[in-house]
Amino acid sequence: MKEKILETLADLRNYACSKGIEASFLYHEEDSYLMRFANSSISLNTNEHLIRLEITVFDGKRRASYEMITDLSKLDEMKQGVDVAAEMVKYAMPLNYQPSIPHFKENHVNEKGFDSDLAGLSGEARLDYFNQATQGLETDKITLSGVFYSGMNVLAQISTTSEFTQFSKTSDAQITIVLAHSDLKWEVIAEQSAQKVDDLKPEELRTQLAYLIERYQNDPAEQIPVGKYDIVFGPAATAELLSFMNWIGFNGGLMKRGYSFLKEDHLGKKVFSDKFTLIDDPDRLETYPLTRDSMGIKREAFPFFENGVFKQFAWYQDDADEFGAKPTGHNIPHKSLVLNEGDADVNDLEELVKMPRDRDVLYIPYLHYMNIVNPSKALVTASSRFGALLLKKDGSIVVPFNVRVTQSLLDIFGDKLAWMSKQQTVYNTSASYGARNPTAIVLPKFIQVNDLEISHSNSSY
Image (tube, rainbow, N blue to C red):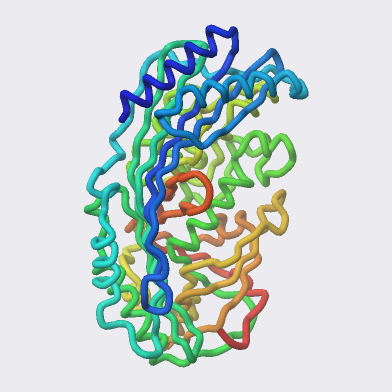
């Protein structure tokens, strides 16, 4: 398959060159498999194979892109796409800067992140995974829903500036299991990310679900008072917070446009807790990394924060062209974020519950419907859902109804950050809509942040 893809791209390059067209070509191929459960049965079991070709034509400061769904056997149709993009660029408004054209200096192939066993996982295997993960947990009142999303992703590139190509291939899986009580309306959830088939461990999800169900069935449910709490975030909540930081924090172009809470004055200064070190690390296969960006820049470990000190902005090529900055190898569909571990020895929820405490601690594993309140102040808002617990200082447990947190990331990861666990995990942040773009973050299993404000508390689930 790889040889046919690269041969097709070379043919398209030759066609563009023969017509005097400056162009770049981005090939994206995906095999996607989705098994969805609802009301304790399979509601959808489907798959699709898609090939997208994005053709970008350059003419001085003009640029136009044309994307098509195609097939490797339809070379003539792809050539027509080149002609369409070349016609489009004539009518494009010129940019106020000179856009860069990808220029690859050598052939690059990266298939380290591909596992054929995971990419080719059968429907029977996905069903067996769900059966193992929920064995004995469903009742006439507790019903199962969830998804098992897996597949293969290929990205390949060429441009008219050189004959060299880039090729990357990854496999991925994302599993979400929800058990909900039909009368009481509570829900508990467990998730898992996989880069290779050995990462699939349904027994771990069953352990998590069984413990939460026991708590939700046997501990009292209450509307807790608004006010300040020491909050422990689970990996899903922390990953969501980091995803928003990735958006409104260290993006150089957004900083220049006033949509970031970080400014150039922050460079080299302490912004967060000294416990906070965040790196973009393309050596971590769990994050489905790209080791070259779409401009051909070799990607290496890129620290954003070291012990709370802000080190550097990420610069996409287009923003670098516009603002006169140096590109940093971030013309990629996703980063490979790694939040370094802490020093607290807390491996799972049961160990967290058993930890001694002199104050009540609110455990929030998931943040739901998160959104930005004020990007320049890093202010975000979200509600809890799926498995929150109030761990009382006397050792008892209360199941809280949903609460809302509206807080600045500068506080959450700043001086209020009390501890992070030694143990790390991988949380999958992939979206199942649009072109396949497997994404995951490596981070501590738990972090505790003290004195965070709960602004609203629901009176029911």
